[in-house]
Each structure stands twice: as C-alpha cells, then as structure tokens.
Length: 278
Image (cartoon, rainbow, N blue to C red; front, side, top):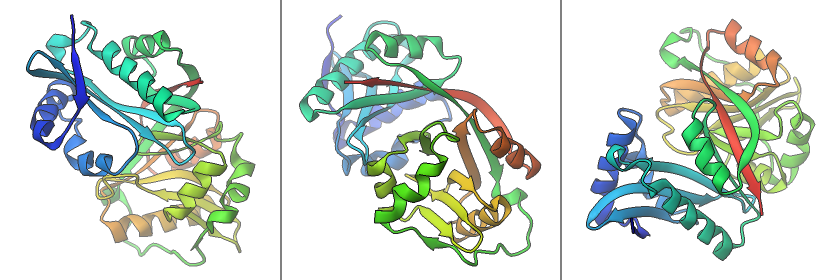
C-alpha cells in the first residue's frame, strides 16, 4: 500500500496521540515531549493511509551528531502492513540528508518484530541493558546529603567519564536514550548540568532527565562512593519533584546491580540497543 509521510505538525498532534494510545496503552509520553521534540534536529514523522494517520516516528540528532530513532508507534490495525518500514525509510533519508555517522535505537530484548525491522535497515545489536527503579515515596524521610558535589566543567567531562567506559559498555542512559560515551556526548551532558563530581570522595554521578523530569530522575552513572552518590541523587529528585529514581545500565556491570538491589531498587525488563555505522 502507498503511504504519505509528512512532519507531525501541531494540527495533527491529537491524531498522533490517538495512535500512541492505541499502540502503547498507558505507556504514553508524546504529549509531554512534543514541544521538546520541536526544538531538536530531526523530524517527527507522521504516516498517512489516505486521510488517516496510522503511524509516527521521531529521529533526533544527539550531542555527538548521531541519530537516535525513537517514538515509533503504529496503530494496531495497521501493524505488519509496511508502516514501520515506511518510517525507517524516512529515517534513512534523513540520515543521508543530515550526514549522520551512526543511527541507533532500543527495543525490548525479547521484541523480535522490532529487532527484525531494524535489522532490515542494517542495525545490529550492540548491548543488553537492565533498568532498575525506586519510587521516591519508598525513600527514607531523613534528609539527603548533597555536600561536596559540583557540576563537572564541559571541557573536563570526557576525561572524568572515560575511565568508566568499559564498565558501562560505552553508554550512559537517560530516559531510555542511549548515549555513546564519547567526547561530544560527554561535553553535551556536562553543558546540560547532568554530570556531577565530589572530588574529595572520588564520586562521579550522572543524574537528571532528558524530558519528563517530574516523573523520574535518571542515574546514568554512579561510581566512587555509591552510597554518597545515591544520597545526592535523592536530594536532586526531591528538589525536582521526581516521582522515582531510575538507573538503566549495561548488564556487564554486576556490582552496580547488586548495589541497587541492596538499596531497594527493583528490576524491569531487559532492553536491547541496536546500531548501524554509516
């Protein structure tokens, strides 16, 4: 079937929200992030079958100039009818136009259809991640201690984070956005005020949110005195009214997993990152 693709402009947002609700149930966030998406490089694409909007997808250019493929949603009655393929073709057109060196996405580790579609366009699995979360309502009422932490300057960011690259399998994660731990992304992280360090204890913490900061404070890296770092993350969450702490990390980091378990975090499903270098 022939589909028409065009940007998801505000006049079609309600239809985009309908598609997301039909595809995702209660796991929706487009309404919260649409205005943010408009500030990023990369198109929010809408797929039309005649006059009916049946699918959406977003390509976002990250700090390092790579492309992140996200928010791909297809109305259930239109799944397995080439809508997802049409969105991927548009992703590839944008990658060519924007000269993006790399494209990446994530899906559930057991989501065979999603992974299969990505493989049709050259993406292959790079890593498996595990996400842990803890509602802030479950945290102790004792005041959190944020002493000693200061933002890391942009020019120091990569040097501060590079020692942990192997342990985190080369990524830091925020809002299920998987950033390669390279110079561009590390500098962008620091410029956004999400990289913290306590020099005295040698503790390094990535904490913040790409979007929906009221729903979660995301811990992208926690090293050094982890208890001290978690206490500071608690403080940030309280200041920002975040409903939970979230930590998404490569499964090659068992010591971090054990620490999170010891501190009351519970695990969700495993997630898979897929990439292609162009």
